[in-house]
Length: 534
Ligand SMILES: Nc1nc2c(ncn2[C@@H]2O[C@H](COP(=O)(O)OP(=O)(O)OP(=O)(O)O)[C@@H](O)[C@H]2O)c(=O)[nH]1
Ligand SMILES: [Mg+2]
Image 1: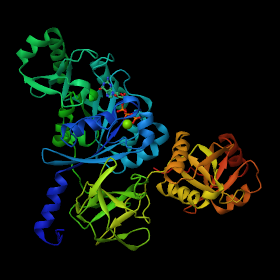
Image 2 (image 1 turned 45 degrees about the vertical axis):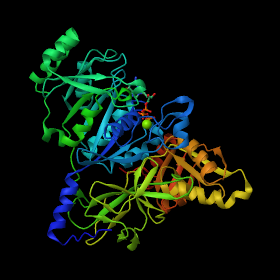
Image 3 (image 1 turned 120 degrees about the vertical axis):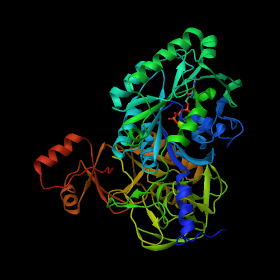
């Protein structure tokens, strides 16, 4: 293992240099827009995999590196975010494919706390769908620069100019196309490179498994080959250019404009252009604000924070992985850092680089990188790790759960496994585990953002912990954060239930909003706050 001494001026420069060559990016959108397919296509183009969809899904469906969970393969949807690192043109890209389904948005929100930019994927036929808008709002609040990719242009769908209008009207972002489609959606004949005016023609490959080779042709060749489609594309691209829709780095970085690219991820069209865009214009890893708003320079001592904890990624080892985003300094495997919440030293002996579910030992990591710390049982999402001067990064956003069920073991001989599994799901934090005096430890309450999280919990309990569970419905839809005095008052109200989260927070559950409103009116002194924190 090489040693890097940060006090040494030269190595300080090395950290800066490594940070400049890092991009940390999430792919976000409504379900099914093609995030996992695009992730796979980016890997293919960066030569990180030889063939797209090589790991097969159910019923011959194309599978992807990022959808590694059995349930993801079976259902063809992403359930859990997956981090992947690859290199393109000397730049290291840490890409996180996120689940689009609203039930899993807690995971996606956490990822957005850990990245420096995002690719907002838009299905050409559907435009800006509901969940895309929600995630866009999160990006806006956090000031995350967005690159827009209009996907599935091979299918009949929307009109390119109308999509630009929609983006501008609904997000307020000024769209600045970097590529423009030749041919209407459903008749994809290639791209105009808006900067050079060249025609990019693609040769499709069988099933989109390999890179679609491309020819870079002149405008006159474009006219010769694509005729009226070329003319229409040039006319539209010129119109936008005249109206000032031209990429401006500072507007993009301040999240005022969004570069737009067109493509078809499943056919690998427009993917190389996106990859180049990530290298050329996406922001590198930079200083990050701590809880007080102070920014810790990338070349100061090591610091990072946990944004995700996941177990069961490797069925042979049954271990758990804490994903750490490196914010400053150099991470050296084996280094002893401070675990900020406990103030205890933490040894980083088992550190790995993730590639979907595959991984390899990582000895050094730099600002922007995502490191998997294995079996780091003390780590929870949101925890800061540092060496040298102390720092605390903001906590992870927390969601308002709206679905509540009790979980019980259906196999009494599996009591230990049941406890262990529930505890692990609680530590991961995408489902919250609440305990109530009325029920005891045997039947914890699981609180979720969406009902699909229960299905995932049941499947994981059965498969990862060999502790099958059953749920019982609860008559609650609202959770409020309360204090001890409020708990005393609520104890007299049979329609609500006072519970305690593992971290000691008191949470009251109510059948509906109306009940909470009535209580507020009758007892204005009660503390009945939102559970969510953003
Ligand atoms: N025709 C066409 N189909 C595509 C394209 N990109 C993706 N698809 C298909 O769209 C479907 C959804 O793709 P995914 O990549 O799983 O979508 P996702 O955004 O990751 O979905 P979630 O993870 O569930 O949110 C799959 O059947 C893909 O093959 C494309 O460019 N053209
Ligand atoms: Mg997906």
